[in-house]
Every structure is written in structure tokens, then in C-alpha cells.
Image 1 (cartoon, helix red, strand yellow):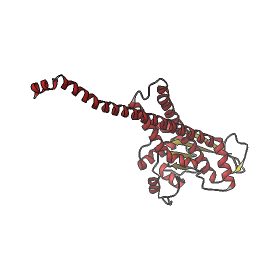
Image 2 (image 1 turned 90 degrees about the horizontal axis):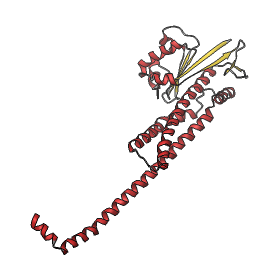
Image 3 (image 1 turned 90 degrees about the vertical axis):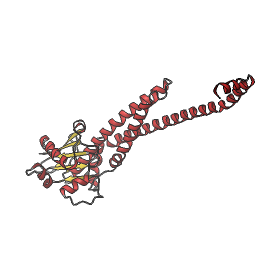
Image 4 (image 1 turned 180 degrees about the vertical axis):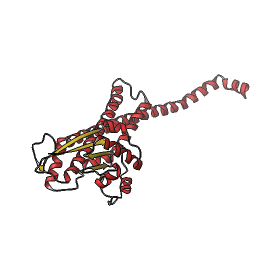
Length: 288
């Protein structure tokens, strides 16, 4: 019985894959996909010793999956790779991570997750599929927490205050929350597009079946739908509140215009009254 251990981590908002491709001299066109795979020869260079059965998958959206790595080897690899693409965010590393185990029996058959009752013949594409699913699950978890936090802030500020009769009691906070939401959408839009794709190199029937089973195991589709709904709710709140804010500004501007227009007849009336009582001539004598 052989056990394959997958360790997935979120290590950065985004990874510069071109630098990794250039450093390890990977024979890949720059227009390929949104991840790179480091094989044993590359890993030997990093760890400084011969490795067997190890792989590393690095994803553009900032996740990395280690295959058959011990914990210390993970740290060693990350320390080495920092010299190529810069310092990682270890707060992300400690907060967003998942493990996965695939067991292979003596007949070369494997369970793609622990509680699965279905056996598949082990093929080289299985580590690839598991790594992709694990990375997607971690990234989805990060996006879920981010959008939930923003939605809570938006609902508290844009819904709670208006119900109490106070629309945008704190304009600085309104601008800050709106900026956070817009920045989240800008930074996550590419990641969401990547998560929509399967990212599977092998398109055989069995590989697609394994991918779909693992996606169902990690509930990727339902989680993705929930994420999209929350993002749509954010957009709806921002759109509604921006419209209310715009209309409020229009009303203020209209009141100002009415006030300024009302000053003209009032000025003429006041001038007529002053002339009637010869007060204007007194002012001219005093200040003329």
C-alpha cells in the first residue's frame, strides 16, 4: 500500500509564473495555462538532494500544491523560491491550507479520497487532478471569506444606517468600503475565471470522471455558485446605494439652485426698500 500526500497552500495574492518558467528553464510557451509543474529534477535543485515521487504545482492565483513533501521540505522549498519571485505572505500560508491523501494498493488501484468506495487504476494524471482541485478549494475558501466579510460590512453600513434614517453617516467609511469592494472585484475577477475552468491536461473519460468526483467531494460547484451570488449581492448593494447617493446629491444641488435663484428677487426687493427710505444715499455718503 502506497500513500500519496498532497499539501496545498495559499502563499500570495498572485504568482509570477513567467519568472519560475525562466528560472527553471521550462520548455513552455508563455501563452499556455495558469499553472506550472516542477518535476523531480527541478525539486532536486531546490532541496539539494535526490527526490522520488515528488512534484510541485504552482498556480497563477497564488496557490501551490506539494506532492509527497514533508513539512520541513515545504518550508525549504518556499525559502528557496522566495529568491526568485519575492517574499511570500506567511499569514496566508498559515490560514489557507488543506491536505489530501490518495492511497494506492498493491494492484495499482487507488481511492481518490479516503472515504471513496470507487477504485481507479493509478495514472500520472491523478496527481495533476488532485492538485488542481485542492488549489481551487483553497482559493475558493479565501474568496468566500473575503466576500462574506465585505458583504457583512456593506449590509451593516448600507442597509442598517438607512433603516435608522441615516444615509451614509460616515462618508469616509462609505468610500473605504466601496473601494474595498471594487478592489476585491478587480483582484479576484481573473481568479474566478480560472476557477471556472477544469485545468485538466488529460481529457479522457476516466480523468474527467475523477475530476468531477473530486469537484463534487470538495463541493466546488455549489461553493462557486454561492460565491457568485454573494458577489452579485455586493454589486446590487453598491449600485442601489450609489443611486441613492447620486439622487441625494441631485436634491442638494437642486435646493442650492432654488436658493440662489430666490436671492435675485429678494435682492431687488431689498434694494427697492432701501431706496424708498433713502438708506442707499446714506451708505454712499458714509462709504462712497
